[in-house]
Length: 125
Length: 265
Image (cartoon, rainbow over all chains, first blue to last red; front, side, top):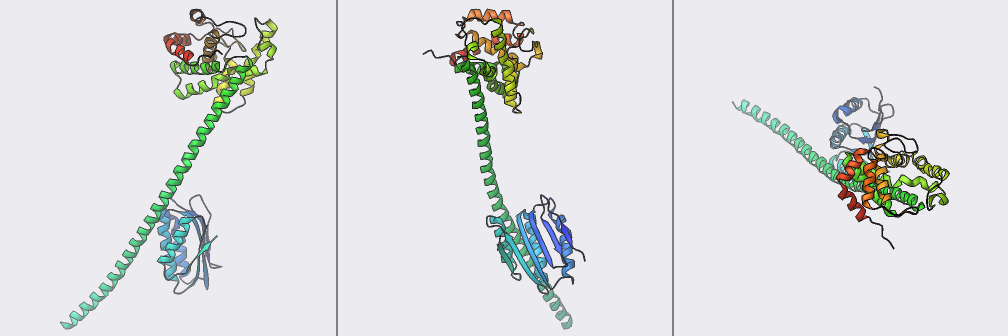
Protein backbone atom coordinates (compact mmCIF):
# COMPACT_ATOMS: atom_id res chain seq x y z
CA UNK A 1 0.00 0.00 0.00
CA UNK A 2 1.27 3.42 -0.96
CA UNK A 3 1.09 6.87 0.55
CA UNK A 4 -1.27 9.30 -1.12
CA UNK A 5 -0.37 12.96 -1.25
CA UNK A 6 -2.60 15.50 -2.98
CA UNK A 7 -1.17 18.99 -3.22
CA UNK A 8 -3.20 21.98 -2.15
CA UNK A 9 -5.13 23.89 -4.85
CA UNK A 10 -7.38 26.95 -4.75
CA UNK A 11 -10.38 24.71 -4.26
CA UNK A 12 -9.05 21.64 -2.50
CA UNK A 13 -7.04 20.99 0.65
CA UNK A 14 -3.65 19.40 0.93
CA UNK A 15 -4.30 15.75 1.67
CA UNK A 16 -1.72 13.45 3.11
CA UNK A 17 -2.57 9.81 3.63
CA UNK A 18 0.49 8.22 5.20
CA UNK A 19 0.12 4.49 5.78
CA UNK A 20 3.70 4.14 7.03
CA UNK A 21 3.17 6.47 9.97
CA UNK A 22 -0.58 6.09 10.36
CA UNK A 23 -1.41 9.70 9.61
CA UNK A 24 -4.43 11.03 7.80
CA UNK A 25 -4.32 14.75 7.29
CA UNK A 26 -6.38 17.31 5.36
CA UNK A 27 -5.48 21.00 5.50
CA UNK A 28 -7.07 23.83 3.58
CA UNK A 29 -10.24 24.75 1.74
CA UNK A 30 -12.64 22.33 0.20
CA UNK A 31 -15.00 23.44 -2.52
CA UNK A 32 -14.12 21.37 -5.56
CA UNK A 33 -16.30 21.46 -8.63
CA UNK A 34 -17.06 17.77 -8.26
CA UNK A 35 -16.56 16.94 -4.61
CA UNK A 36 -17.28 13.22 -4.71
CA UNK A 37 -15.07 12.63 -7.70
CA UNK A 38 -12.25 14.58 -6.09
CA UNK A 39 -12.45 12.58 -2.83
CA UNK A 40 -12.99 9.21 -4.51
CA UNK A 41 -9.30 8.17 -4.41
CA UNK A 42 -9.16 9.37 -0.79
CA UNK A 43 -12.13 7.25 0.25
CA UNK A 44 -10.78 4.27 -1.66
CA UNK A 45 -7.40 4.65 0.02
CA UNK A 46 -9.06 4.78 3.43
CA UNK A 47 -11.10 1.64 2.79
CA UNK A 48 -7.95 -0.11 1.71
CA UNK A 49 -6.03 1.20 4.72
CA UNK A 50 -8.56 0.05 7.30
CA UNK A 51 -8.89 -3.25 5.52
CA UNK A 52 -5.94 -4.75 7.37
CA UNK A 53 -3.28 -2.15 6.53
CA UNK A 54 -3.78 0.22 9.44
CA UNK A 55 -1.11 1.05 11.98
CA UNK A 56 -1.72 0.29 15.63
CA UNK A 57 -2.80 3.86 16.09
CA UNK A 58 -3.97 6.27 13.42
CA UNK A 59 -3.88 10.02 13.83
CA UNK A 60 -6.46 12.01 11.90
CA UNK A 61 -5.84 15.76 11.59
CA UNK A 62 -8.54 17.77 9.88
CA UNK A 63 -8.00 21.47 9.41
CA UNK A 64 -10.61 22.59 6.94
CA UNK A 65 -10.98 26.35 6.91
CA UNK A 66 -13.65 26.63 4.27
CA UNK A 67 -15.92 24.04 2.68
CA UNK A 68 -19.04 23.82 0.55
CA UNK A 69 -22.07 21.77 1.49
CA UNK A 70 -21.16 18.76 -0.64
CA UNK A 71 -17.79 18.68 1.13
CA UNK A 72 -19.69 18.74 4.38
CA UNK A 73 -21.67 15.71 3.19
CA UNK A 74 -18.44 14.06 2.14
CA UNK A 75 -16.96 14.58 5.60
CA UNK A 76 -19.99 12.83 7.11
CA UNK A 77 -19.22 9.87 4.84
CA UNK A 78 -15.59 10.14 5.85
CA UNK A 79 -16.43 10.00 9.57
CA UNK A 80 -18.88 7.16 8.86
CA UNK A 81 -15.98 5.24 7.48
CA UNK A 82 -13.83 6.09 10.51
CA UNK A 83 -16.65 5.14 12.86
CA UNK A 84 -16.90 1.77 11.23
CA UNK A 85 -13.15 1.32 11.50
CA UNK A 86 -13.08 2.49 15.11
CA UNK A 87 -14.25 -0.85 16.50
CA UNK A 88 -11.01 -2.51 15.34
CA UNK A 89 -8.63 0.46 15.24
CA UNK A 90 -7.30 3.01 17.64
CA UNK A 91 -8.03 6.45 16.27
CA UNK A 92 -6.94 9.86 17.42
CA UNK A 93 -9.10 12.42 15.64
CA UNK A 94 -8.44 16.15 15.75
CA UNK A 95 -10.69 18.76 14.20
CA UNK A 96 -8.49 21.83 14.12
CA UNK A 97 -10.09 25.24 13.80
CA UNK A 98 -9.23 28.89 14.04
CA UNK A 99 -10.95 30.80 16.82
CA UNK A 100 -12.38 33.30 14.39
CA UNK A 101 -13.72 30.67 12.06
CA UNK A 102 -17.19 30.10 13.43
CA UNK A 103 -18.37 27.76 10.71
CA UNK A 104 -15.34 25.49 11.11
CA UNK A 105 -16.02 25.19 14.83
CA UNK A 106 -19.72 24.53 14.27
CA UNK A 107 -18.95 21.84 11.73
CA UNK A 108 -16.62 20.17 14.24
CA UNK A 109 -19.36 20.28 16.86
CA UNK A 110 -21.82 18.75 14.39
CA UNK A 111 -19.47 15.85 13.71
CA UNK A 112 -18.86 15.38 17.43
CA UNK A 113 -22.58 15.22 18.04
CA UNK A 114 -23.34 12.94 15.14
CA UNK A 115 -20.61 10.36 15.68
CA UNK A 116 -21.10 9.05 19.18
CA UNK A 117 -18.69 6.19 18.67
CA UNK A 118 -15.84 8.52 17.76
CA UNK A 119 -13.83 10.83 19.93
CA UNK A 120 -13.34 13.97 17.91
CA UNK A 121 -11.12 16.50 19.63
CA UNK A 122 -11.88 20.10 18.81
CA UNK A 123 -8.50 21.75 18.75
CA UNK A 124 -8.26 25.54 18.78
CA UNK A 125 -5.30 26.69 16.73
CA UNK B 1 -48.30 -26.00 7.24
CA UNK B 2 -47.13 -24.80 10.66
CA UNK B 3 -43.55 -25.24 9.59
CA UNK B 4 -44.22 -22.99 6.64
CA UNK B 5 -45.75 -20.33 8.87
CA UNK B 6 -42.76 -20.39 11.24
CA UNK B 7 -40.46 -19.84 8.31
CA UNK B 8 -42.59 -17.00 7.06
CA UNK B 9 -42.56 -15.35 10.48
CA UNK B 10 -38.82 -15.76 10.67
CA UNK B 11 -38.42 -14.15 7.27
CA UNK B 12 -40.75 -11.33 8.20
CA UNK B 13 -38.79 -10.72 11.42
CA UNK B 14 -35.62 -10.48 9.37
CA UNK B 15 -37.31 -8.13 6.95
CA UNK B 16 -38.52 -6.00 9.84
CA UNK B 17 -35.01 -5.76 11.22
CA UNK B 18 -33.48 -4.84 7.92
CA UNK B 19 -36.31 -2.42 7.23
CA UNK B 20 -35.78 -0.75 10.55
CA UNK B 21 -32.07 -0.57 9.95
CA UNK B 22 -32.63 1.02 6.55
CA UNK B 23 -35.18 3.52 7.83
CA UNK B 24 -32.83 4.43 10.68
CA UNK B 25 -30.14 5.12 8.15
CA UNK B 26 -32.49 7.16 5.97
CA UNK B 27 -33.64 9.18 8.97
CA UNK B 28 -30.04 9.75 10.01
CA UNK B 29 -29.13 10.84 6.49
CA UNK B 30 -32.11 13.16 6.30
CA UNK B 31 -31.15 14.74 9.59
CA UNK B 32 -27.61 15.19 8.36
CA UNK B 33 -28.82 16.72 5.13
CA UNK B 34 -30.98 19.14 7.05
CA UNK B 35 -28.10 20.08 9.26
CA UNK B 36 -25.81 20.59 6.29
CA UNK B 37 -28.41 22.75 4.62
CA UNK B 38 -29.03 24.78 7.77
CA UNK B 39 -25.33 25.37 8.26
CA UNK B 40 -24.86 26.18 4.63
CA UNK B 41 -27.75 28.65 4.63
CA UNK B 42 -26.43 30.30 7.75
CA UNK B 43 -22.97 30.61 6.30
CA UNK B 44 -24.28 31.85 2.99
CA UNK B 45 -26.25 34.56 4.73
CA UNK B 46 -23.20 35.59 6.69
CA UNK B 47 -20.99 35.58 3.63
CA UNK B 48 -23.49 37.58 1.65
CA UNK B 49 -23.80 40.12 4.45
CA UNK B 50 -20.03 40.42 4.60
CA UNK B 51 -19.83 40.70 0.85
CA UNK B 52 -22.31 43.55 0.82
CA UNK B 53 -20.43 45.39 3.52
CA UNK B 54 -17.17 44.96 1.60
CA UNK B 55 -18.82 45.96 -1.64
CA UNK B 56 -20.13 49.10 -0.05
CA UNK B 57 -16.65 49.87 1.27
CA UNK B 58 -15.17 49.38 -2.18
CA UNK B 59 -17.83 51.59 -3.73
CA UNK B 60 -17.24 54.31 -1.17
CA UNK B 61 -13.51 54.03 -1.68
CA UNK B 62 -13.80 54.32 -5.41
CA UNK B 63 -16.07 57.35 -5.06
CA UNK B 64 -13.50 58.79 -2.67
CA UNK B 65 -10.72 58.13 -5.17
CA UNK B 66 -12.67 59.67 -8.03
CA UNK B 67 -13.61 62.70 -5.95
CA UNK B 68 -10.03 63.17 -4.85
CA UNK B 69 -8.81 62.85 -8.39
CA UNK B 70 -11.41 65.33 -9.58
CA UNK B 71 -10.51 67.76 -6.86
CA UNK B 72 -6.78 67.47 -7.43
CA UNK B 73 -7.19 67.96 -11.15
CA UNK B 74 -9.53 70.88 -10.66
CA UNK B 75 -7.19 72.48 -8.14
CA UNK B 76 -4.24 72.03 -10.47
CA UNK B 77 -6.23 73.74 -13.19
CA UNK B 78 -7.12 76.55 -10.82
CA UNK B 79 -3.45 76.93 -9.90
CA UNK B 80 -2.60 77.28 -13.57
CA UNK B 81 -5.30 79.91 -13.97
CA UNK B 82 -4.45 81.81 -10.81
CA UNK B 83 -0.93 82.27 -12.12
CA UNK B 84 -2.41 84.34 -14.89
CA UNK B 85 -4.74 86.21 -12.57
CA UNK B 86 -7.89 84.68 -13.91
CA UNK B 87 -10.79 83.63 -11.82
CA UNK B 88 -11.54 80.07 -10.77
CA UNK B 89 -14.76 80.36 -12.68
CA UNK B 90 -12.91 80.43 -15.98
CA UNK B 91 -11.86 76.80 -15.50
CA UNK B 92 -15.37 75.87 -14.38
CA UNK B 93 -16.87 77.40 -17.50
CA UNK B 94 -14.30 75.86 -19.82
CA UNK B 95 -15.01 72.52 -18.16
CA UNK B 96 -18.76 72.83 -18.71
CA UNK B 97 -18.41 74.10 -22.30
CA UNK B 98 -16.03 71.24 -23.08
CA UNK B 99 -18.48 68.64 -21.86
CA UNK B 100 -21.30 70.18 -23.86
CA UNK B 101 -19.15 70.25 -27.01
CA UNK B 102 -18.07 66.66 -26.41
CA UNK B 103 -21.65 65.43 -26.02
CA UNK B 104 -22.92 67.18 -29.15
CA UNK B 105 -19.85 66.04 -31.03
CA UNK B 106 -20.93 62.48 -30.20
CA UNK B 107 -18.46 61.39 -27.56
CA UNK B 108 -19.93 58.99 -25.00
CA UNK B 109 -21.17 60.44 -21.72
CA UNK B 110 -18.30 59.06 -19.61
CA UNK B 111 -15.70 60.42 -22.00
CA UNK B 112 -17.44 63.80 -22.10
CA UNK B 113 -17.41 63.81 -18.31
CA UNK B 114 -13.73 62.95 -18.31
CA UNK B 115 -12.98 65.80 -20.70
CA UNK B 116 -14.95 68.10 -18.45
CA UNK B 117 -12.64 67.16 -15.62
CA UNK B 118 -9.47 67.26 -17.69
CA UNK B 119 -10.02 70.51 -19.57
CA UNK B 120 -9.43 72.80 -16.54
CA UNK B 121 -5.81 71.68 -16.68
CA UNK B 122 -5.21 73.10 -20.14
CA UNK B 123 -3.10 75.94 -18.78
CA UNK B 124 -1.28 74.06 -16.04
CA UNK B 125 2.00 74.65 -17.90
CA UNK B 126 1.65 78.32 -16.97
CA UNK B 127 2.94 77.54 -13.51
CA UNK B 128 6.37 77.44 -15.12
CA UNK B 129 6.05 80.81 -16.89
CA UNK B 130 7.51 83.84 -15.05
CA UNK B 131 5.05 86.35 -13.61
CA UNK B 132 6.61 89.22 -15.53
CA UNK B 133 5.55 87.61 -18.79
CA UNK B 134 2.36 86.01 -17.62
CA UNK B 135 0.82 89.13 -16.18
CA UNK B 136 2.22 91.69 -18.54
CA UNK B 137 -0.37 94.29 -19.47
CA UNK B 138 -0.49 94.99 -23.18
CA UNK B 139 1.05 93.03 -26.02
CA UNK B 140 3.98 90.64 -25.82
CA UNK B 141 7.16 91.31 -27.70
CA UNK B 142 7.97 88.31 -29.95
CA UNK B 143 10.47 86.80 -27.48
CA UNK B 144 7.92 86.97 -24.70
CA UNK B 145 5.28 85.40 -26.86
CA UNK B 146 7.64 82.56 -27.76
CA UNK B 147 8.27 82.02 -24.08
CA UNK B 148 4.56 82.16 -23.31
CA UNK B 149 3.84 79.55 -25.96
CA UNK B 150 5.96 77.06 -24.06
CA UNK B 151 3.19 76.56 -21.52
CA UNK B 152 1.48 74.01 -23.80
CA UNK B 153 4.50 71.78 -23.99
CA UNK B 154 5.35 72.35 -20.34
CA UNK B 155 1.88 71.23 -19.30
CA UNK B 156 2.16 68.19 -21.49
CA UNK B 157 5.54 67.33 -19.99
CA UNK B 158 4.08 67.56 -16.50
CA UNK B 159 1.18 65.24 -17.19
CA UNK B 160 2.28 62.81 -19.88
CA UNK B 161 3.91 60.32 -17.53
CA UNK B 162 0.70 59.39 -15.83
CA UNK B 163 -1.12 56.22 -16.77
CA UNK B 164 -4.40 57.57 -15.41
CA UNK B 165 -6.99 58.07 -18.11
CA UNK B 166 -7.94 61.45 -16.71
CA UNK B 167 -4.38 62.75 -16.53
CA UNK B 168 -3.62 61.37 -19.98
CA UNK B 169 -6.61 63.30 -21.31
CA UNK B 170 -5.38 66.38 -19.44
CA UNK B 171 -1.94 66.02 -21.01
CA UNK B 172 -3.54 65.99 -24.48
CA UNK B 173 -5.63 69.05 -23.60
CA UNK B 174 -2.59 70.92 -22.26
CA UNK B 175 -0.54 69.99 -25.31
CA UNK B 176 -3.01 70.75 -28.07
CA UNK B 177 -5.35 73.50 -26.89
CA UNK B 178 -3.44 76.11 -28.89
CA UNK B 179 -3.33 74.13 -32.10
CA UNK B 180 -5.50 75.51 -34.88
CA UNK B 181 -7.65 73.69 -37.41
CA UNK B 182 -5.70 75.35 -40.25
CA UNK B 183 -2.35 74.18 -38.87
CA UNK B 184 -1.21 77.67 -37.78
CA UNK B 185 -1.31 76.99 -34.05
CA UNK B 186 1.35 75.83 -31.63
CA UNK B 187 3.36 73.96 -30.43
CA UNK B 188 3.32 71.54 -33.38
CA UNK B 189 1.25 73.21 -36.06
CA UNK B 190 -0.91 70.13 -36.26
CA UNK B 191 -4.05 70.53 -38.35
CA UNK B 192 -7.65 69.36 -38.69
CA UNK B 193 -8.39 65.93 -37.28
CA UNK B 194 -4.75 65.29 -36.50
CA UNK B 195 -5.45 67.51 -33.53
CA UNK B 196 -7.05 65.35 -30.88
CA UNK B 197 -10.73 66.09 -30.37
CA UNK B 198 -9.95 67.00 -26.75
CA UNK B 199 -7.53 69.65 -28.00
CA UNK B 200 -9.97 70.99 -30.59
CA UNK B 201 -12.80 71.19 -28.07
CA UNK B 202 -10.75 72.87 -25.35
CA UNK B 203 -9.46 75.39 -27.90
CA UNK B 204 -12.98 76.59 -28.74
CA UNK B 205 -14.13 76.48 -25.14
CA UNK B 206 -11.08 78.37 -23.88
CA UNK B 207 -11.21 81.07 -26.54
CA UNK B 208 -14.95 81.58 -26.17
CA UNK B 209 -14.53 82.13 -22.47
CA UNK B 210 -11.37 84.19 -22.71
CA UNK B 211 -12.90 86.61 -25.22
CA UNK B 212 -15.90 87.18 -23.01
CA UNK B 213 -13.78 87.97 -19.93
CA UNK B 214 -11.70 90.93 -18.90
CA UNK B 215 -8.02 90.09 -18.83
CA UNK B 216 -4.96 92.04 -17.81
CA UNK B 217 -4.21 92.84 -21.44
CA UNK B 218 -7.73 93.42 -22.78
CA UNK B 219 -11.36 94.13 -21.97
CA UNK B 220 -14.14 91.61 -22.48
CA UNK B 221 -15.58 91.48 -25.98
CA UNK B 222 -19.30 91.82 -26.57
CA UNK B 223 -21.17 88.82 -27.90
CA UNK B 224 -21.66 90.06 -31.45
CA UNK B 225 -17.92 90.53 -31.84
CA UNK B 226 -17.27 87.05 -30.42
CA UNK B 227 -19.86 85.45 -32.71
CA UNK B 228 -18.48 87.14 -35.79
CA UNK B 229 -14.96 86.01 -34.88
CA UNK B 230 -16.24 82.45 -34.45
CA UNK B 231 -17.81 82.63 -37.91
CA UNK B 232 -14.56 83.94 -39.38
CA UNK B 233 -12.49 81.33 -37.62
CA UNK B 234 -14.77 78.44 -38.58
CA UNK B 235 -12.43 76.09 -40.40
CA UNK B 236 -9.48 78.40 -39.62
CA UNK B 237 -8.75 78.46 -35.92
CA UNK B 238 -11.61 76.14 -35.00
CA UNK B 239 -12.97 72.78 -36.07
CA UNK B 240 -15.98 73.78 -38.26
CA UNK B 241 -18.14 71.09 -36.70
CA UNK B 242 -17.56 72.54 -33.27
CA UNK B 243 -18.42 76.06 -34.41
CA UNK B 244 -21.65 74.68 -35.88
CA UNK B 245 -22.41 72.95 -32.60
CA UNK B 246 -21.70 76.22 -30.79
CA UNK B 247 -24.23 78.19 -32.82
CA UNK B 248 -26.81 75.41 -32.88
CA UNK B 249 -26.79 75.20 -29.11
CA UNK B 250 -25.84 78.77 -28.35
CA UNK B 251 -28.52 79.11 -25.66
CA UNK B 252 -26.98 76.24 -23.70
CA UNK B 253 -23.50 77.74 -23.89
CA UNK B 254 -24.77 81.14 -22.80
CA UNK B 255 -26.66 79.47 -19.99
CA UNK B 256 -23.41 77.98 -18.69
CA UNK B 257 -21.76 81.39 -18.92
CA UNK B 258 -24.61 82.83 -16.86
CA UNK B 259 -24.54 80.11 -14.26
CA UNK B 260 -20.81 80.40 -13.69
CA UNK B 261 -20.54 84.14 -14.04
CA UNK B 262 -17.59 85.85 -12.36
CA UNK B 263 -18.67 87.80 -9.35
CA UNK B 264 -17.20 91.26 -9.45
CA UNK B 265 -16.29 92.54 -6.03
